[in-house]
Length: 164
Figure (cartoon, helix red, strand yellow):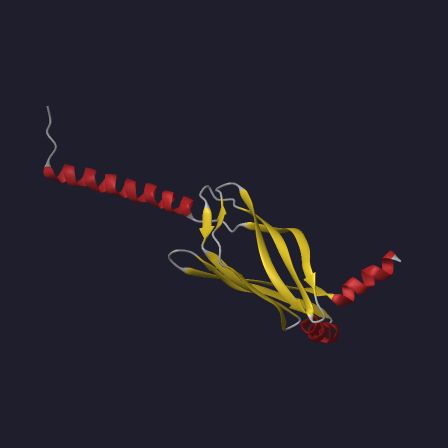
């Protein structure tokens, strides 16, 4: 019968540590989160006034991760053609189950003046640029977010002419 020497013991331990490290890296990679998919479910105007209107938008948030996503609140703003037209916040618990979806309703107010300020900018640049940004708050940290894009008004006008 052959006994393990101290050297063989350390080699076996080193191999076991390397295997554990590689296996641990795989587990860490699996913990990487995927971005939730967000779509508009509903838009509802709550009230109208001479200066603007209040409304709420219902967003369907799909969580592709195996764990729940939760937040204690968020603040948000929408800029359209370089003019801030929406600013709001929601100070309620938000939770989306793992591999599930949830509807998040965001209240907002728009003034007619902000829309009137944005329209000439969009027409002049021929692009309706938008930027939706804000912060998502959890118990431990603040997570900023931003999504931007634009709509080519010239191409949209051409498509509308072709339809007629």
